[in-house]
Length: 387
Ligand SMILES: *Cc1c(COP(=O)(O)O)cnc(C)c1O
Image 1 (spheres, rainbow, N blue to C red):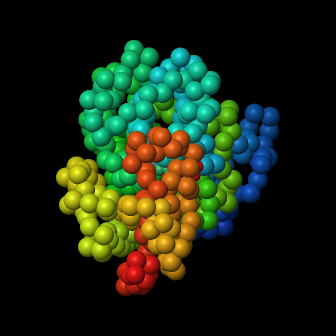
Image 2: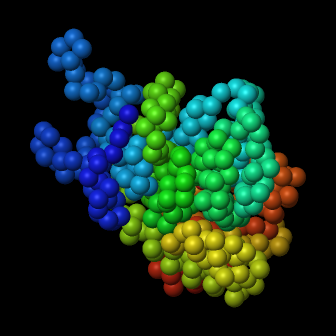
Image 3: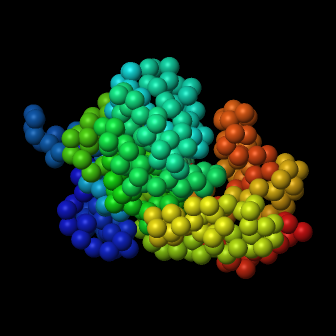
């Protein structure tokens, strides 16, 4: 089980981003954690080894990443997985057939698909509610409820859940609060400060930030719960390879430099869009017109680079999506390069059409992930596409 180095919690965020979880490599003193490309470790004698036996259980590159992200979130234990989805899947193995989970109704499409198409058939039951309203979470609680899982802000509708309220309701029901912090990152939002029990990420997105790997990460504070997840990580084995861990660790070193720029570009693009198509069509928590702007401002220290815009029809959406040159048409988000996508046919294609309509993921909705390019070029690109 990977526990943080205790002194890693004493420094500022940027220092932790660069140093937490890493110590100079003992053989040569390499300042960068090596990629430990090995499946096994030689033992000194029967029952005597250096703490490493087999690389599914432990890998030093993976441990450095686990400690690093755990320190950024303000947790104690980190667990890296092969993808964000594998991470949720392993977290769900904390529960048993018959247990009930309350899940935000606008979570990542792949999370919903995992629950609805796979885990439901293994005996877990799920209720999907609008977690913007803590009353709805409370009403969905049953004596079998073991967890409340929320994503805030959500993808792609940027709904905000009040984490303190959600934690209160979950804990009163004897359930855990599990938070997908992929969109905000620990740079802008610390769910543990609001009472979360498990914080997780698709590290594929902002934490890695360079669109060159797939990964997931869970962070916990409670030792006993962490011990159970450590067992699952090893027993189910959905672990990432060391090179992907190394890439993610390289990514987190600049998280505190990238996020302010994503945020600044996000604000400028959102303001441009609001002026161009009307603020009622632009969904960005940093806009005063966002219905939950006050909560976002209270709970987050920035809004990031994710923006959705409803252009009314699929044709209008297609025209913009096909005419941008810097914003590339692609799924995913959170990289240094700007992307544009069509949730209804791309990231949320696995959500049934009736459900998409209910939620407001219309055919005219496009989603932008503002990268860290020069803002003048991004606005000129949109100017051209919207002409
Ligand atoms: C991408 C994403 C996931 C899934 O992560 P993968 O790494 O693609 O498996 C989960 N939650 C959110 C919010 C995401 O954006």
